[in-house]
Image (cartoon, rainbow, N blue to C red; front, side):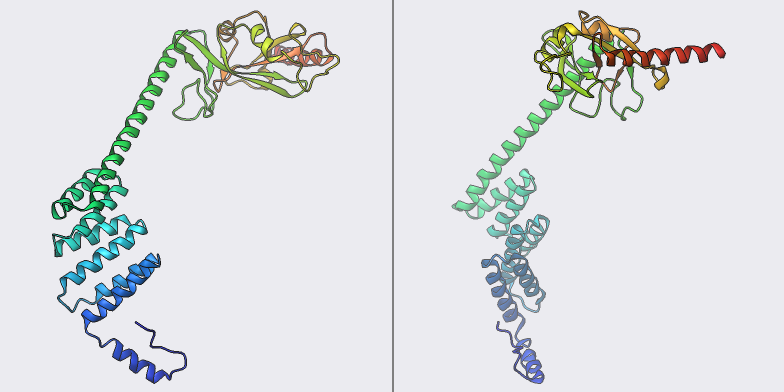
Length: 344
């Protein structure tokens, strides 16, 4: 239809012409609106197409069932493009109620069901459509697509279940491995709900090497003098601190002196900071560890407490002013605590 409200016309004439336009028979008016909708669909203006088809369907003062079915299936096609799958199915159901033998309605229903991953319903629509149109190439292609999509979906579901089962199995084995190491102590203070004492909410987690039965821990080596650190993703519990430091300090750190490096394997000592569960800063103590000690032995020390599932060690250079000050700080903390205890 052409726009009757031309800007140059008198208002009275415009209203008269509009009145004549809307006096068209309902079937003719619905047909004209359908054609407008088709033009909008061809131009990929799907929302506008839906509006025209909807307006056409509002003209229900006629008995042209074929026109109603055509409008419903056309609106379904536009809603398919807009991914309004529920509305597609509603229109196709209504079209099939009016005329059960409508392959287009079945075809578009199948596409909507496929998009919603309702494969059984999609297959049923394809089957019914092929009974009405045995040679329908589009329907046959869609039927194959539904079958392939369902196979791919089922495969993804199986793979996800397998991953989840493997993850649950690994977690259970890890739990048992930790439980049999009775010397391990954890501080779960502040741990998030649902996490075990040895877990945290990062990707840095202790894991079990099923081939050896060894735990492999994420470990931090801390260098307080430079406020730097090294992170070891998997420190096998059977490995000694010396073996790991040999790799970590294979080259002088970038922050160490190149000419006279202090942080070399034969010039450092290793410590851990003991802080009782629920303790405060003044309760901290510095505990020296032999570098030839295996990680498992250190972690089962009666004063070692694992926090957030990540053990950490302090590395200090020998015979160094900073080291003397650092150690003296913890000595003063201990003396102050002992003096306060004696007063009590």
